[in-house]
Image (cartoon, one colour):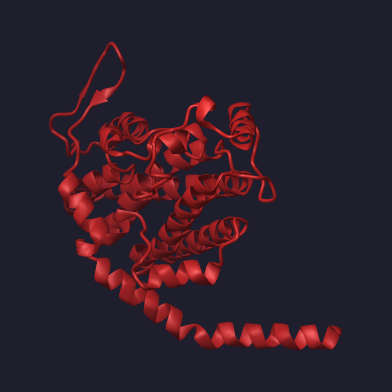
Length: 327
């Protein structure tokens, strides 16, 4: 979900007869539910797909600090400032876990970050939308982190061990993020008419981008089959989106807000809600860099990277001194 444009091998899934002996043994381990560890043999396509997915996930956590970090100093109370600061700090930690997991696949964290800063790497489209007022902090925590939890709980079962284990810690913290967002919305709808209107406006603006977080429809997601066969992904884009809608619409009704999708209806036989797809042309335009905040996000990340150069240099110099002293 945070890796919306991941491509795997670009080829159809091989049958067992088409696989080499090593590939068959590898697939047998996957099918048996075993975890693949960094020193284990793995197909090149598996490794490359993981690098793309984990790095895009890491980039999303890091860029995801920006829409909320902008509101830390403007939170309405000291308690809200502390909570939001803790949440943004968590996102930085999630990026660290994920970059560390990617490094176990033989890539450099510095190279991955350079790709992000140069615009060669992608991150979740949701973070290219603005956060205009305090109600957006509630909607982001509730909708964005709520959507993230659906995907990330499933990723605890992903086949690559370091990624799976990182998800366990991340999911515990994401559940706090979603609760704090819903709590903000609860306070807003219980306030003045103007505050409730702000909550409704935030929901209206972020509903469709939240649906986009799960990636394009399965029929247009041509690389999902291989990722599913390798159990890198364990839930399709459409399955995740449906689960999110089914979970969130009752919460909207509980808050006393209007569902942005006026056509959404619950099927009493299946228990699932029907819903209108978001604008996929908008989705792909945002991924290509034409969203409302793409340029601002990259300027902010590059500035932060440049401003922090002295600190990174200091850490390296200290580490070199410690190495020399130990010799």
